[in-house]
Length: 312
Image (cartoon, rainbow, N blue to C red; front, side):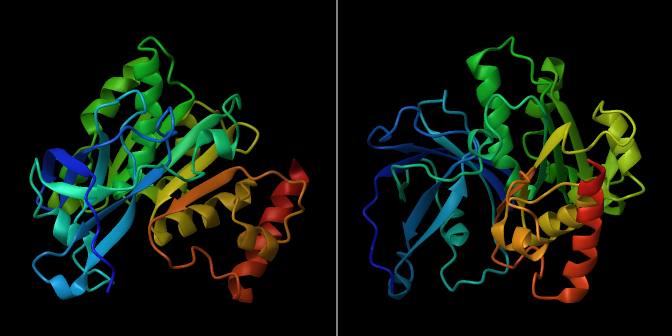
């Protein structure tokens, strides 16, 4: 049993988007250890004590930050209730009982390398294609919100956010991101259960379906990259979500020459050390995104990638 946590933060606002999707704003008791308190793309650990079932103790989980560093009053988190948790003491089941003014634990230091700075460098001129499934949108909201708050006249044309959810109501931050298209942001939203959303007239399918072979030519055009333009010399890809979204995106972009940053995948695909990565991901579950021990999976991917790299 995990020992009880000493609470050091307060839930100051909660916005319920649906019964199982909410935005939580949490204010720490003490200022962050660093200034800025985080870099867009990083995460902190939230935790709570199970006071109803004391024998289960406490639980902590890392949560991506959706707010921008310029928003000093509270950190914002975009969270989905987990219906089928792997743990007997899931954090979201405790969070869903919390109301504004309730106390909780928040680690006073943000960490993580899923940032533009750590991935490709702040000065990299290529288009940043950000693919998100569900609450994987959080780090990308932080990135574009930070740029806009830092300079309301800033051009966001270097960012494209592709967001997928089951239903239109699950497309959190849609209004905000749509507004930011006036500042150059490319924003695409897709719904995977359109038959249950008769009023939806936008894109359909899962987030990773944007990269299907028969849809890539349209995506090239919508991104403004021209025919076959979604290539590593024009763009970098950042993915945030679960194994399925990440794995399928990698499989679909390897023929275009995109090289994952993951060391195990690079070794399995025999990527030379001097070949830079141009596809980065933050994973919300623990299932390997690609089974690198399965020759039936790895060998075709290796051939496709090396063929693509030979054309560069």
